[in-house]
View 1 (cartoon, one colour):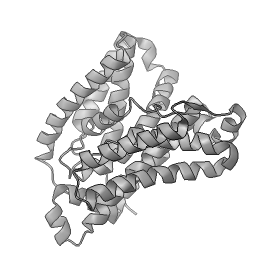
View 2 (view 1 turned 135 degrees about the vertical axis):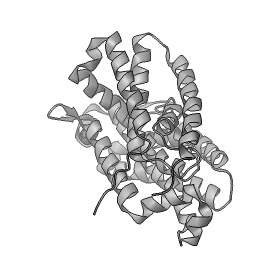
View 3 (view 1 turned 120 degrees about the horizontal axis):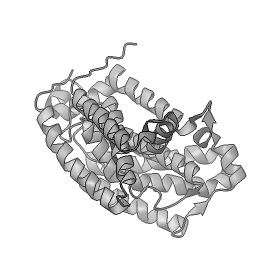
Length: 315
């Protein structure tokens, strides 16, 4: 198996990342300490998991507005079932995320409802269901139960946080799928030109449906890791994740118009968002103002991605 890493289009986000790290490091030299950088990677791991799933959706030219609701659902399902079901609660929480993604995919691919409307509706229904299941409150995880059943997500190996390891494994798996499987090539082809993809024998319906299932799985995994880190499942656990996740994917160079992009670019985009957020925290920008900044970043990134997409072709 050969994985081809196409570095075209990566230079700009990589250069922006280097400059951003340098600027934040100049403001506060402690930012460049290994321990601080490790914590930064740990903090961005859940956002990265969500953004990984969004990457495939956006590469097909669609959008998913339900990830934060799916992450919240999986965290609540985990918190409710973990005391009685043990480890089995984890796959059930993941299945709940895949099911939500599948419903969004059916509404979009089969019922022909635009993806932003379909996922906005499914996200709203999912959020309401989560509020009902949790009785509109956070559900705390027992300390001993959390330590024994979620140690894979909250512990560390030789000082490296497990959530970073989980995110790294997810990245490698998604990279292999994208670069070394027919499915990954089909995802890119569908986003680039649906008519050509159909002529090439690609099953458009399956690709359009399955990318939302992938996004649902990754969002659910993000919610599970979040629940482990915060020791609770909550209907609001991922409320501030959606805009940064979309911004990270697009900022990395994956075009909203579809056909171009990669999970490697998403990694760079998430790192950029993490550095931006850290810089804003250093200068005292509050959370609400940060969302405004991420919105502006998204607008800028969309404009740049459209220009880049016009000069790239499916490899």
